[in-house]
Length: 440
Image (cartoon, rainbow, N blue to C red; front, side):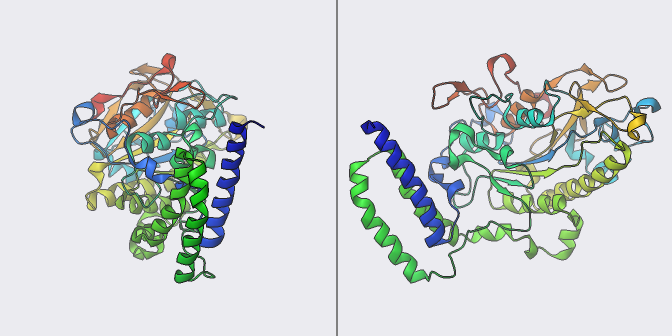
């Protein structure tokens, strides 16, 4: 092997050793935070002139996984052949909502509904990948998730906690791709499980821990002299980051059981609602990007029964989140997003117990808070909700708008290790443009 290959092998071996050692000796799973200090310096944050009057500091992305039916939620049609049994209710805004979203109607004054979304991906995995990265999947590279882009360009606000947390979703949607592990989202399967392995192991006393760290520092001296590279310096910061995490008072933000029972009940006694509560607690302590996933929207069969059940969960969790953020003075600094990979077909499939199939050519998404013009709608679908009528919005445009709310340069080029250029808002041919008119 060449010297270069030997060095790479040494680095890989050392990465495994240090990660496993930290897990064994400190009791901390530190992989998501490796080199986290590098993630605290913004690369693309802009002045107020490049975004809304007041830039957002945080994003809560509510992912409706499975393809939420726009026609039964945010874009109800009068034509009964399309609407089926669903009725529209007034919201006091520029848009009507489904009868399944009565509590959401109460916070409509903070929302902008985008009824002209369109995507080129009509399969779930590919659609979710596009929604989360602005790129179609490729076999040769893994693109960073939007949450990772936000942390990379905006920087971490709280330097002792992860900048990106994903609750209840597919861990693939929290990947940092070629950015490196310091920008990856920390996946939590359940909102009530806390941040696992974030405390000192019970078998290791505080004094013994410091002794072990001193021994590790002594062992590291010769290695540091031999290999003076940025990666080695990043590995050296691993233990410091783990200690900071263990000592952080903000770890309590993950303990949603500390909330009064009245508050927890307001969000709904389900994983999504409690995930929304956790998201509020995390942005309260400075976490940049939190994603909470609500699945079950793949309604090929018995669409109306399934959508009614899913919408009830969304309705309670989302409306409680908006109200809670407003009460705590956090709504102006937090962009709340409801996103999905595509919509459902206008035609109702009777032989599938009134189901709806995949429909990427037209669907709905929502933005609220963070300088959004409340009570407004952007874009229109045609009479049946089959295709976009006016002001089409691509998935890349949608993600560019998230970046714009944060004051990020979404067309800024960052290169992969192989030298290929990438942007938060997608490739040249599909480069997204922010919808600036929906902001105050």
